Image (tube, rainbow, N blue to C red):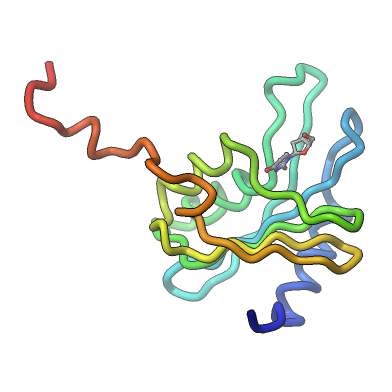
Length: 138
Ligand code: THU
C-alpha cells in the first residue's frame, strides 16, 4: 500500500485539532476525496445532548454534498493513539450512500499504524436505494 500523501496527512492533523469532542475526549478527523479530485474535511462535533453528536466521516461527507458533489472516490480517517479506528457502523452506511464498495478507506492513527481497506469490506451487503425501488413497492 503506497504511503499516505503528505498533503492528506497534514490536512488530517490540522482537522484533528479542530475536533469538538469535550464529552468523549476522542478526536476524529476525516477527509473524503470526490470524483472531481477535490478534498473535503470534517471532524466529530459532539453535543451536550449526546445523540445529536456527529462523526467526522459524516461531517466530511456533508461538506462534499453541500458543495454539489455526489461521488466519493477515497476516504481517510485519523484518530489519536497507536491504533487506527475504523468508521463506525453509521458512518459506513452514510459513506455508502455516495461511495461504491471498491472505494478505498484508509484508517490512520496519529502515532503511525495504518489500516487500509475498502468500504465493501467494512460494509458488505449494504442496504441501499435498490431496496427502495423494487417491484411491489406500495
Ligand atoms: N466517531 C467518529 O467521529 N467517527 C467514527 O467513525 C467513530 C466515532 C466519534 C463520535 C464521538 O464524537 C467520538 O468519536 C467517540 O465515539
